[in-house]
Image (tube, rainbow, N blue to C red; front, side, top):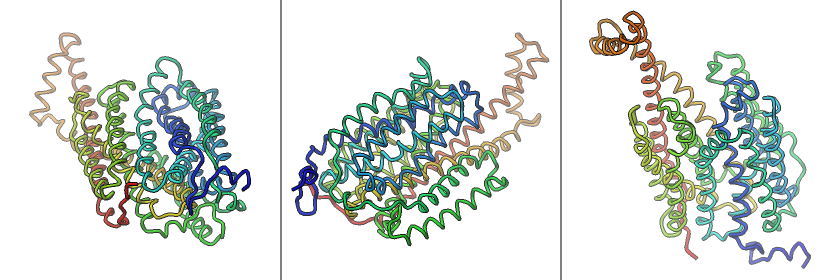
Length: 523
């Protein structure tokens, strides 16, 4: 037995790592938490970043877009890259890349430099989630994978809840640069843990392949075109813009060429043949809609609703979202135990029903609510996330071979990222246009012939006259009612969109009938 073989024992076809599986879990979850935190804490700091690097609101959104684009491009090739370079070296390389990108982000003094640094950070961070998932799924026996995915899911779902709170506190008390510098000590600890506990599976030594440069280039073209198009679509009025039409053509042609090339080449950078597995394809599609479009849109727009319409500061908005993390924590550990004794599809149905109800409840809010009115829906949405994430991942990957796991998790996370971008783009468009429609409907009532409007106008005018005089008070009263009209039309648009998300989550339930009938046995 060689020295390399001595590090891995064999039991039939199952490779047993020498480190305890839970030590491996800690080693891969630490950098995963770092990456997920980095994708959320920066949102709170965007206004401060814009002012510091002399960028407008539209320009500074590239700080997010560039990171997501780099994430999406690297995700599906993680399995192939980890086979070429070895999984341990690849994870170490990802952490170091993320470390360097974070340091560069904190040192940036111009928008261009910051965008380049975010791309570097995204290339290192995007690979961590799928490769960590693959390591966990391979390190645990099948009957323990549900528990492992539950613990892993805690880091994925709770970190975005902590992120806005931590980002708001750091930005208010120190500087937005420390939002990025926070990753440096976590990165050093992650390097130590990976060096001590992560090993290369034996089959990786036999799987190194030539670089699929053409497939990689086509992947960059269609993913970048899609994400830029989604990010700029509403601002450019979609197909009325030549830029959006050009990006759409590049996306369609790039995607078609990518699919044809990857299916014909013997050693593709992304193994699209995995999508021939019906269970994996259906599970990935549901994950794209649920974890991508629905959940990401909800977690992105609820804080915006709290801050812009209710006037919450960033820190209070983050604290209001915290019950969602508690719900996710409880559900993750509960599902990890139930998944071995209950049909996972029943857990998924419960999760989607809870998610639909929580989103519908959020859609019934108004401008006079207290923070307590958001606690229960947030808690239920977090619990629903736990009931969806663990069974869906376990079923989707359940009948894949171990050597297919890394490629599969790359595709799984890529499409989730694209679903997130599509959900944000669709919701952004519906928000803007829905607000215009409601504004048109409401302004029809602001006429001298509407009794309720005239009564309210006179009340405000009477209250302002002692301070401003009759003439000025009349103008101020009209202005205040106009401002209130804008708030109400925006509120109605938020309500519409939260209800659309509730409908989309419930609409996922029929697709669960086509998932494989799997029941994990306790061991």
